[in-house]
Length: 346
Length: 267
Image (cartoon, rainbow over all chains, first blue to last red; front, side):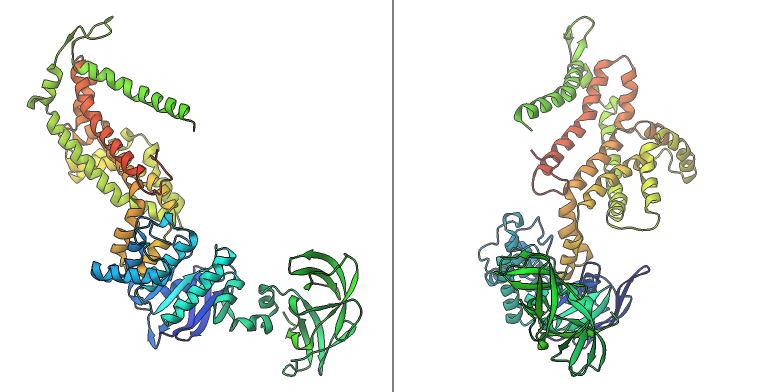
């Protein structure tokens, strides 16, 4: 197991700063997601860790050793892409054994270890198959086996769950998780999909425009986002400006009790509540705001409501059996413990 | 495409390519063939005897053409493959200019350029040598290598190479185990093109070779204008044989396995 440390890591392409002064300490055996919209620098970071791209400035360390001078083929960080997974002209067995062949192992030993590895990814006896004969999920497992067989110090995955349907995502998630823990590996994966990051990662590093925004456990991005932009990225669009005085925050005319607000000094804040934490009421109740229904969409397990709250558009989840005609007035109750305060200057 | 249209197309191509060849075959065995006879009135092997005699120099010219063609193909790969890769996969300042310069030889008539090149080659002492002929054949050959390979690399993803690198393959092994198998079908087509371009060069060989480098086309072209149709027909059949062989071989290897050149040559 190897810890991975990124120190002041920077990469420029001409005038564009793809990765800007990134500091990240990934513990040995940890599974970390680099999350962000396309062009945020996450793939660039992954390729720098792999050794396929050299940083403009900063350092990359595996354990306490800098690996900047180590070329990709000797760095021990294996990269598994989600697209163009397998070498098309090789059999499954040749694909999985590729890394061992490059290390000069004898055919006999390679064959034994390929067999073991294919059993581990639940594809026993697939040695002679060709890549194009396999399903997408099977190809992904072969690609994973090909990476794992060389016992990499760090496993790097590019969008590991993308292009898989919901059932396969869960299965693949379990597989990656169990293999990563069984083989005691540090793993870093890149994704633009916050759901994928939340499902799989121990910790998530969220990047916008090449800058690290927040590095924390998945739960924190829902409960304690550090900016409105982060909250929005995690599908929370409910914000209201307010002034905090003691345990209350005043938004427009209505004062609300804030639960976890003791650490925040009095002043101007941006209040936010996640869509699924808001409770819907017909009449005014404790800690509630008046809202007008703009639109309601049935989503199967809940109603997606678009509301006007104090002039701001909110999206909240209501009970699936509720009836909310457009134009009607409802009350939304904000549980004090679920209200999160953001700096007002965003 | 329905089998009727496919059959008609193949048949049409067969007639267009095959019929002139058939006439050449008849001519090469003809001793007397005058208007209005549909077939020769007397047959003979004299043309083929001449082709295989030492005095015709056909054997020698065949070897020269083969040698020059192979050298041109290999050098075109060496120049054109990296150039095509750079053009297809990278953006760099002046890319448009480089593309234009590389393709200009297809547009500019060879004779024009060759006149000037001849003077330079005399100074460089490569005029009248096989080396000079190889160099001048590269001018029309390399653009075709690049044109074909750019389209090959445009459909190529370097992610496979990066995967191989991180799995422990150095640059040479990445090329050998990953890149080459992926581009091989396209590379074969491009190599065939460049070989045939060199094979059919006449004016450039005549000017730069100065009559000392005798390729097959140097023997054939003067005969075509002459009166001996039978000999011209026999030599032209020798001239066309490698092209047909190479085409058949390439089409077969293209039909096998996955190809980057979107199914070219597949049935």
